Amino acid sequence: MAANQSDSETAVSPTVVVKLGGAVAAVPAKLADLIGDVGELVAAGSRVVIVHGGGAEVSALSERLGLKPRMVDGVRQTTAEEMDVVDMVLCGLVNKRVVRACAGAQLSAVGICGSDGDLFAVRRLAGNGVAAADASHTGEVEAVAPALLHHLLDAGYVPVVASPAHLAPDVPMNINADAAALELAPALRAQALLFLSDVAGVLSDGVPVAALTPAAAEAEIARRTITGGMIPKVRAAVGAVTRGVSSVVVGRYEGRHTLQRMLAGRQGTTIHAVADAAAPVRSGRHHTEG
Ligand SMILES: Nc1ncnc2c1ncn2[C@@H]1O[C@H](COP(=O)(O)OP(=O)(O)OP(=O)(O)O)[C@@H](O)[C@H]1O
Ligand SMILES: [Mg+2]
Image (cartoon, rainbow, N blue to C red; front, side, top):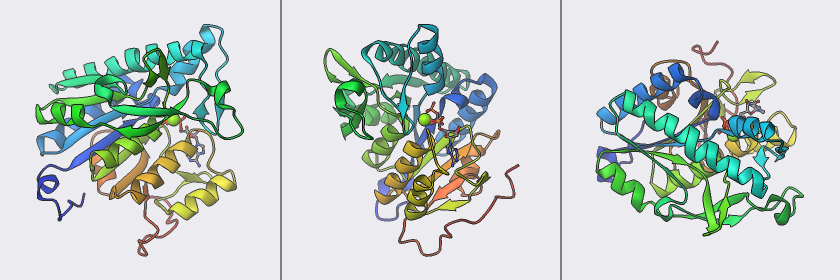
């Protein structure tokens, strides 16, 4: 990972935001290995913030409770009833699972959500032909107050962030975790943002591409080769690169040191800023991908 030479403080302690999809967090052995990677990054001096999703588990519990989850372009349209499920699953089940996995690796973690320490100021999200009232508990981050995260990092804790926040004291809001990670990384002046999902990278015609530019990403969305949950992820990845996060990679957890390989650009799909003329739009598979 390239350190920011203009900022001596961040050059000493690079900040890495790791966004875990629910599929990684749900498999104990994978999660334990991943936290082992985090431990090595922390031991080497990085400040690591974990952000997690858990959409599949939210949908599974919603359906068991007789609710009908609805997604538009990969973003959940959250009713008041489903918002309770979102809070229970993300802020409870998944968040504590990740915190306890950290404890298993002798890392002290603190699990919070977007409401804690006023981390996220949010607004209601409407769009994609969905009226705001129909998605009344789906929000987007308007501003980040990173003070709590800095306090935790300064004290040696690994923050584990579930994305739900609130619009008013009695109005909890669900926020897509990729979109939340997009806002957190620049607010922390992070050098790297890694998206760990259940796919080897961004697939084009079934093949993971090694590199993607913002223009190519929008073209793939328009021709519907990027769909569902990959839409907010790719848009978040592009947004992060555009906002100065130098290393943004989408990939799958493939065992020990996956995070280090992604940081080195040796695994997953690296998103390149448009100005980076050296970046090919697509360059086929990595040797390490099966
Ligand atoms: N072009 C594409 N390349 C890769 N994945 C794609 C593509 N188009 C659609 N997808 C889908 O996007 C999914 C990943 O997004 P998803 O929201 O399901 O997971 P996540 O964001 O990693 O986890 P969570 O939502 O729990 O945080 C993949 O499992 C795949 O089905
Ligand atoms: Mg997702």
